[in-house]
Image (cartoon, one colour):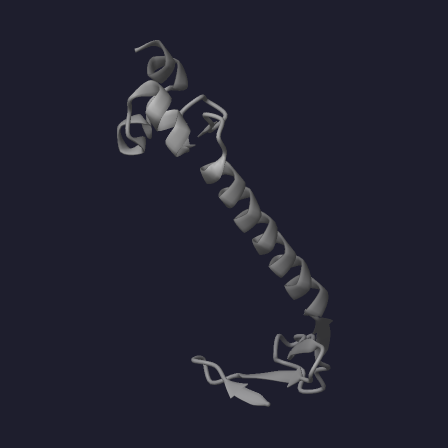
Length: 112
């Protein structure tokens, strides 16, 4: 299948039932700085990348489900201790809604 890009160049994509292969033209410049028309395409098999991306997405969804539905009070902070997420049990235990905690330092949430 051939697709036209906005910049009018072409990106060739070969797709079959099991793999995605992307080709992009490789147009080296000659000594005069002009594009050499004897360019050869570069083939990249993206099926492994796509498979890993899907596995990562499934893992992320599983983590989110476990985090939100845990009977334990859980909060997720960044490296500086700023609250990014908290589950319902954490909200119930400390009496704050997530919107009130988000952006605050975890120590302020825990000590108030």
